[in-house]
Image (cartoon, rainbow, N blue to C red):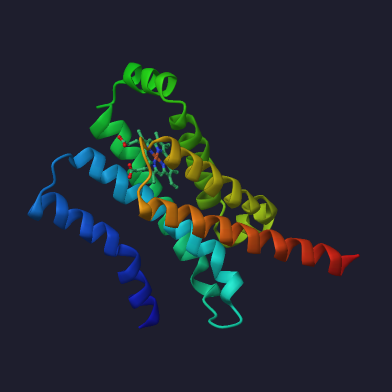
Length: 184
Ligand code: HEM
């Protein structure tokens, strides 16, 4: 039952996106898909990073992998929007956009880190590649820089995002430093 509820929550942004695109209709569907898929991927990455931080109060550790995989799913949707709807499979357009807008590179690096993590998330491979899963912080950081650079100006909501990201990163760094001091 709990799993069903978590799944429904994770799928809610996709359902919302479909309703907006096919029932309510939006002015610029491509831009809208970029916004919803990109923002959802960032929020889910933030949640998956925060799960160990809140385990004293609420233990959601067993859902962490599912949340991470959904973050990857929304990042993939974002990439498909770029390649299929925006570029219409035109390789020259993709190269020109990347040269014109360097933030696209950062998004690509972030995406490939998430792809690696999704592919190595199965039990056997995870054991072997667990230490590389720390790269999720780099993926999130690059995705945030990518998202800030993609904006002409920032809205209040986007400032709230950045504030939350800084807070969570600070807690994580503190946790890591404490761990190192405990070892020595
Ligand atoms: C595969 C690599 C990626 C490509 C090619 C890409 C491409 C783009 C493009 C072209 C935009 C600008 C959209 C516009 O305003 O017209 C954008 C915005 C954005 N991207 Fe990406 N991206 C990539 C990866 C990612 C990843 C991995 C994330 C998050 C984890 C992400 C999150 C965002 C966000 C939040 C925005 C701002 C959307 C808005 O304007 O509200 N992107 N991306």
